[in-house]
Structure formats: structure tokens, C-alpha cells
Length: 159
Image 1: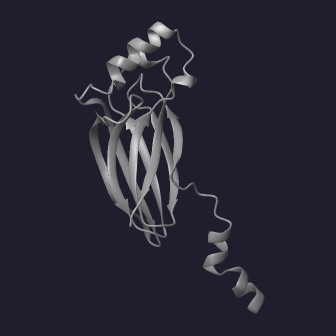
Image 2: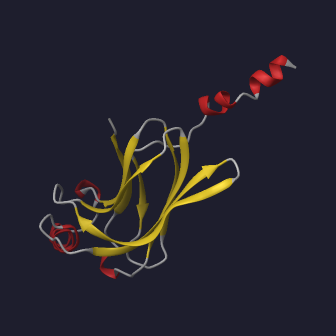
Image 3: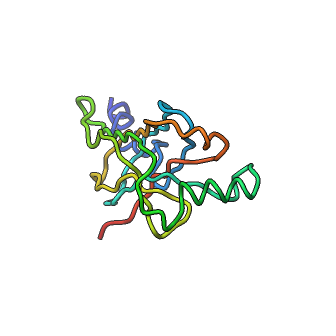
């Protein structure tokens, strides 16, 4: 009986939990409304979490001219205007189900520090908790069908 309660201890589940922790990326197709990228994450330390759209120039399978045209128009560092309407939903897993942390529509914004990303949101999540993060496209961007874009979930360690 003692062995059974030892094996059912909550820490044992956490020991073998393979839920992602930030920095995590997942592909999303921005060309059509309704496309979704979603995952579960675990927060082990006190983090400020950010969600952004990101692309890696090395991962593009299009011509150099087409790549330059798309990246300048949609991801340019000095393009301060908001673009890419997306819906972000963040759910916190609790013992009695889930609670909503965020559930709203955002225009992404230029982060200024990078040509390759557009910020969605940044927020604090509770240490020692699991969350479900879902990003859904709200509008069509058909010219981006050939452009590989990812949703990046990252963190900045809080002090």
C-alpha cells in the first residue's frame, strides 16, 4: 500500500511530464483565416511569456526576390503599422477544469528589434502551472501561402 501511494504522488507525474516549456515554436499558415497553431506549455519558473509570429530566412523555399518582397511588406523592422489579425487564447489548467487567461483578437506589431518577427502579446503566467496556448488566424493573407511562419512562445525570466 505504501508503494502504491508513493507511485501516485504528484511529483512523480511532474518528473515524467513532457509538456513543453518556453521557447517553443510551431508552424502556422497565415494564408487562410481559421488556421490554428496550439500547444500545451508548463511554466517551471517565474517567467514573463511572450507570443509572436516568427520566420527564419533560412527556412524559406521561395526565390530571393519574392522573399524580400514578402519580408519587407509584412515583417519589416521599420513597418510600425499593425498587421496580421490573430486570435490568442490562453487557458490555465486547474484541478477543476480550465480558466481563461487571455481570449482576444490582436493585431500583431513590429518588435523593432528584429526583421523576422511580429509581436502578439506578453504576459505573466503563474509558476508551477500548465497552460494551453492557441493562435488562430482571423483574416486571409493569400500571398503568404508559400512563406513559412511559426508561432513562437518564449520567455524572459522574471527577477
